[in-house]
Amino acid sequence: MQPVSKEVLYIFIGGGAGSVLRYAAQVLLHERIVPYHFPWSTLCVNLVGSFLIGLFYAFSERWQLSTEARLFLTAGVCGGFTTFSTFSNDGLALLKDGFYGTFALYVVASVGSGLIAALAGGYVGSR
Image (cartoon, rainbow, N blue to C red; front, side, top):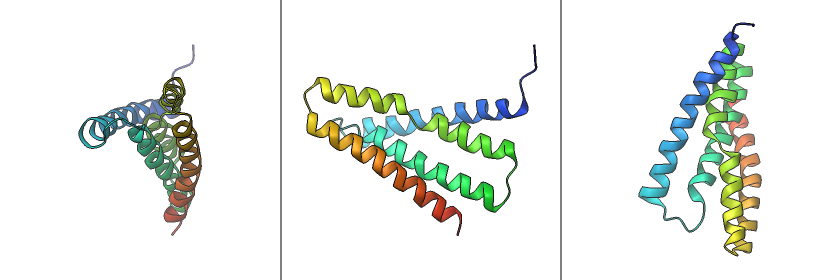
């Protein structure tokens, strides 16, 4: 059996940190700031994560970060922070409750804004 690589360890640590950050952000947004009529907390977390991954990839190229640092920040922290599964579950809940227009808005806003946020992060990071 092969020992765990250094890269896998960095992703593991970053993923744990990102997951805890996501939980804290969603609790703050959902329970303290935004009532749950629309999955705002999931949308916000995914948009912030999309911006950050664009930013981290740009920083990685600009400052020639090590492979370990890049993997820690992108696959680890951003991978743990963002949540496609919660996005999917929130979308299904909207469909099951008959909120078809809200579902469509949520999907378009999540995917479209996520791509724009990643692009913006990359732009900011390359400046």
